[in-house]
Image 1: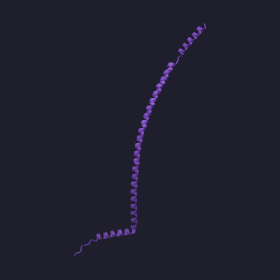
Image 2 (image 1 turned 135 degrees about the horizontal axis):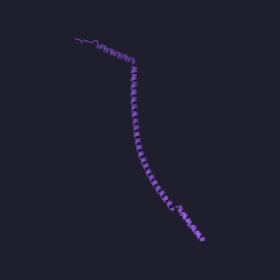
Image 3 (image 1 turned 30 degrees about the vertical axis):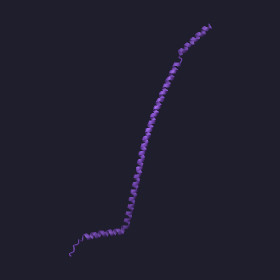
Image 4 (image 1 turned 90 degrees about the horizontal axis):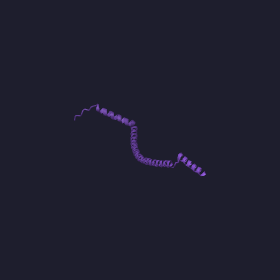
Length: 133
């Protein structure tokens, strides 16, 4: 049987590559394994941190949305209260204005002016004078 011609360039390259990998594994094998273990642990911790952060952000978003709804509801209640208070104040002002105008009219009607008092004194004086004569 004729043997196949071997190419010298491919086999020594594979052997050299395998040899370098073996040397690397011998020299750095433990360190590479430790690094791989640390990277796997860091990746796991990072995934856990990202998950926890997302959950926290979701919780905060929920709280913010609820706070917004509560604030909107409180604003509506306050607006209604302010509107009611404004209406009550307007009614009170109207009632006070009416009462004040009525009191002014009463004072104007019951007030005796100087001329009226002067005439009453003159009449009284004339009556006193006529009785004394």
